[in-house]
Amino acid sequence: MAALTNLLDLDPAALIQWCGDLGEQPFRAKQLQRWIHQFGEADFDAMTDLAKSLREKLKRHAVVAAPTIISDSTATDGTRKWLIDVGDGNAVETVFIPEDNRGTLCVSTQAGCAVNCRFCSTGKQGFSRNLTVAEIIGQLWMAERTLRREQGIAAGPKGERQITNVVMMGMGEPLLNYEPTVAALKLMLDDNAYGLSRRRVTVSTSGVVPVMDKLSADCAVALAVSLHASNDALRDDLVPLNRKYPLSDLLSACKRYLEFAPRDFITFEYCMLDGVNDTDAHARELLALVSDISCKFNLIPFNPFPSSGLRRSGNARIKAFAHILMEGGVVTTIRKTRGDDIDAACGQLAGDVQDRTRVLERTQRMHSYQQKYGPDFGRIVEIPG
Image 1 (cartoon, rainbow, N blue to C red):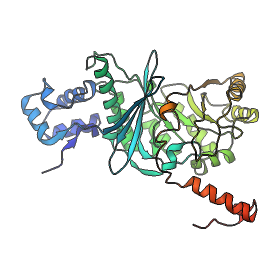
Image 2 (image 1 turned 180 degrees about the vertical axis):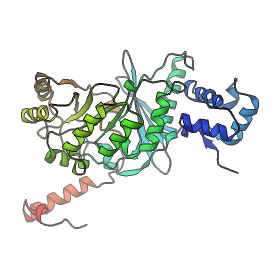
Image 3 (image 1 turned 135 degrees about the horizontal axis):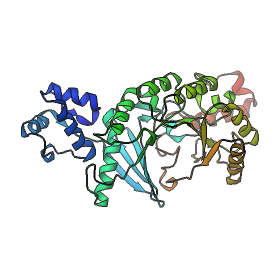
Image 4 (image 1 turned 45 degrees about the vertical axis):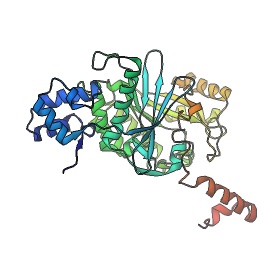
């Protein structure tokens, strides 16, 4: 027997093609898409305006299956985190942040992350695999369906949406899992699915320059760039991807993206690290760096984790840093830390996973060798093992 097709894996064009292969007209694909994504329906018999013959075909050939929820936690500030099973011992996290006038869902695109930024605990588990379209869009499908049912809100386009904004800022680098990410984005934007505005869907990237250009042509949504440093030497240390795509290349790509972006600015994310990237000199260097780019800065208080060796900048230092940027004419916000009591804050996702990169182990071994052989040890010989 052929494997059942998970319809969450199909973007609008692929669903039309799949229905065509079943001998069905394109309008049936649109009906089916509305049932799945607008109504959150997984039971084909409940899709009452589909012909019975089509429903029988669907039961023989298809399924609507989101990833399984392992755990569901709610922080004291209302932030909610779902741990999602994606098979083979891998799990990802999805975070919902409720606010007065909107609800934002933070979606993961990979199990683990290969970029391994120093300040992000997610990268410390290493990279396992890319998520499928169903595993990415399934996070939105599950969260909207769950929230509506709990609130007793009617399913369908007339029901009040609980999720108004989506940010691809969960586990993983979205642009290193490009095709499934774009397929999920197209579902988020499609009026027969979630109907979100391009301005309300944000992809966050650490700077995969060639793929930023591809995204601008294929599915330009709002863009957030994880900057975190004001010069290449510092960014090489904090964001290893910078060694391949340095700041000059990254900022040029940002300018090109603005020609297609739904917003007239790029958001630069900047994690505030005590004594590392948070001085007045760094702020002034940033102003010079982005002087010809329409942008805003989002300053993120660092959320510590044991193996980082980093500390959060103090509130006064963050405010002083923001003041310099604003005095320089750049719109700057300080992100309010949400969900840190359930490890759902920025950089904390999958905070309890095994450190597959062995950063702490290697750092401790380096320290012991330097104590024995002197502070220049790591610069002149390679650590064995």
